[in-house]
Length: 140
Image (cartoon, rainbow, N blue to C red; front, side, top):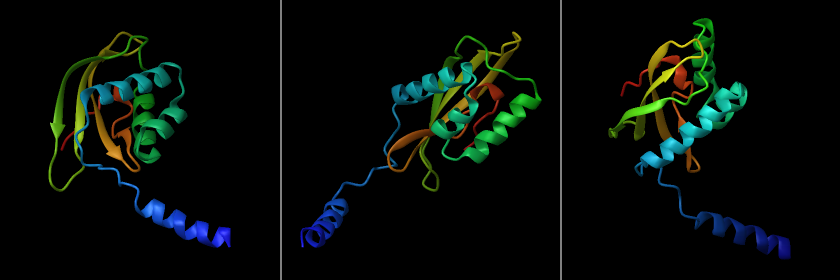
């Protein structure tokens, strides 16, 4: 009887849980923290982990990573510099905070790139462009 009563009570409790507001603005400091975690994984060569942890889906991350590797683009030992940011909040798309980056690949060549951050369920920040050293630019 306890189990029978416990299940409906659990369902009611879950139904009453507040839903994450995926449309609430992303703070720049949150995006910077996600970028820092991403940089640490990239510099350690943990690319599979990076795609799993930072990207909302591994397909796009794998595609960007493959392109960067084919172009012999490897992240440098110094984290990229944030040179600006933009916020994209259109009624038909997910609010996105984009950090505009300038960095240097391990061979000394410079790059410009975007690190686009969105909020995904249950309330997790992810990046649409997690391979930040690939030179990818975000377009809304």
